[in-house]
Image (cartoon, rainbow, N blue to C red; front, top):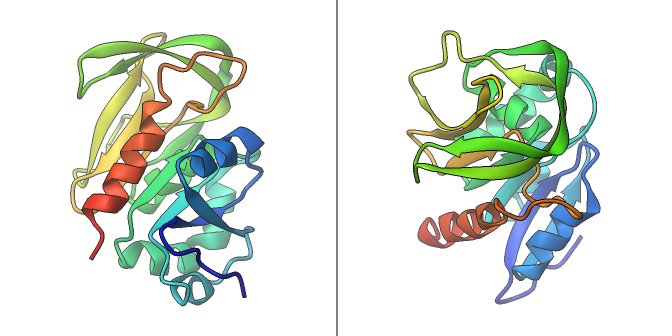
Amino acid sequence: KVKKNKGQISIGFLNFGAKDNIKNNLKKRDCNLFEFDMNFKANDILSLELDGIFLSNGPGDPKKIYTNIKPELQKLLNEKIPTFGICLGHQILSLAFNADTRRMDKGHRGANHPVKNLKQDRVEITSQNHGFVVTEENFPESLEITHISLFDGTVDGMKSKSQPLFSVQYHPESSPGPHDSRYLFDEFIDLIKSNAS
């Protein structure tokens, strides 16, 4: 059993094919990562009494992956632990709250994608690499769209209205690449600290 380090923030890291730099960004912020693959059991994660949950990027159809992990993920989400998702993690969390995803014709690829941060009314230049997207049609009332692509208006970020949870479609950890969105890791840490019991 992995030991939690006193004074560090403990994160349940659901690794679907994560980039190392995501882990590096969390470790730089004094996070202790407990990694789990797609066969995770919610009770194993919950027994550790972790501070936060992270869902990583990775390849594949988000609907197929979500279907495979749905019962265990739902148990985790029911606990309302602070949660952050990137790319595939964003799509999976959106599906868990009854949003929909679709395959894109061409996908978004590159390190210069403009994204509008609706909360702060500013544009961020982002790195993107995905062939599926969360659809804006019938977007659930329980979620709020926080970021949109300025290329095609697609959903690039969301947050829950009822629990400490948010996600983005792009890669704030990108390296080399734009660092406009690195603040999202700090927002995750702030969310954890403000929800600490």
